[in-house]
Image 1 (cartoon, rainbow, N blue to C red):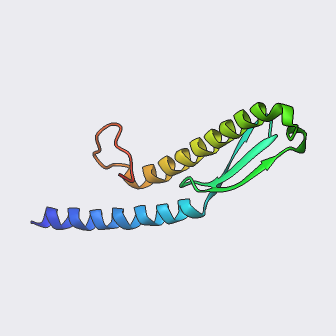
Image 2 (image 1 turned 180 degrees about the vertical axis):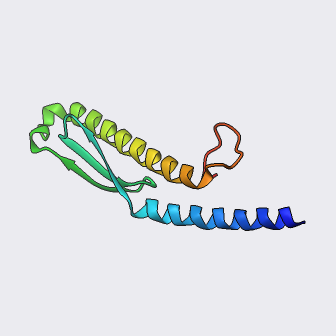
Length: 107
């Protein structure tokens, strides 16, 4: 019975830390870049878009397709950085826990 109580306490601690990391991720801003910084997308580590900066030289109507591609690439870069941030932070609290391969937090 003592082991179960210890496991329950650890689970509660884990849940609290996971909630703290989720709140931290909502406040952490990551930037994705494309076109050598000509397009910059800022978003929270949770994936909420904050801003988009576009170099004025890309605002040529004849180059709309290039701008569209750069926006997609910058967003993907920012999303990847946010996912890496969350994986690192969650890895800090799940270290030592026996978890199946590929299992991600939060569920």
